[in-house]
Image (cartoon, rainbow, N blue to C red):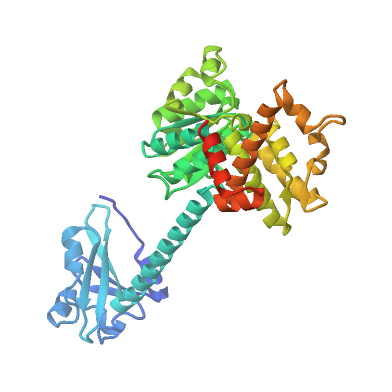
Length: 450
């Protein structure tokens, strides 16, 4: 039991200076002090209350029920509702003040009109409704931001990778994404989050390749200066650690400890539990790095539960064939122009190695749209570093010792696949290519069956 003592003179000065409805009674139930507005809802004045017994006032139906007897009995805070002679309802809160022996010496009661509480409750309800609306809007924005624009799953390897990711989405386990920079790992991570049970909560990304080692722990756990760590912000959601293979051995071990215990220690020594799904990406082979001692074995086994690989763009010709016209349309709309690709340029773009993968392709396509002098874009409109060396031609590049029929058949197949992607229907394809619709159907059947 807590024991409080108060100087009576100081106590009464506080009562006299307040604009709240406060009454002080002694252990006998006699009112020894009342504030300036006490009794206003009971039809009595503060002066008339002084020296009166709350027991008598209860008998006279002024205070019904009286709170002082209950506080004296319970020796703790009591809350109740009184019906006043004026027909109003008052919320009464009684607090005990103890003497040095631990006995109740005085009781302070505070009252406020019930209608005021109704107004406060209405305000709180409005605030709660507004918070719910804002939460719904934030959830919608998160869902919209997580849906990748123009997602292309034309190649078998990409569609299998995304299918595997979505199957694992509901398992709520760590996922490790492999692949070169720009192959779509971040896009897949967002898709997994959107289809998981954590989709209503935050999706945060920390680029382990760029954050300084001295700031990594601060970014994740926060600091004593008030910075909130990403593990707290992402509580209930997902944290995507991009380029986890770039972490130093020290940070790998620190991260492994946090993930294993599901908690971290603040600078003040407090242990903070967290509930965050971890997804990570790596460009290199982590299993080999573990064997070489370059990556923490403990961390590897904590995150290597669902490994998914995204192949380089040069190995995904079907994706590349779809991405080229997609980026062309996107950047034409962005810059308010209308450009088309010549067939020769399209064929050349299909054969480029694209070491920067999708990011590099998007950059080149936007530069083409911006820098192209004519509506029809050709190889001459390419940025200088991508142009064909003088004396070469696209045909010579693609010969590779093959006979002419084989070369022509390869070109025909690519043209048909590109036309199908661009025009959609065999009727429109036939119109644009200048051949009959049955010929288009026959040729598609031939090449799609290969």
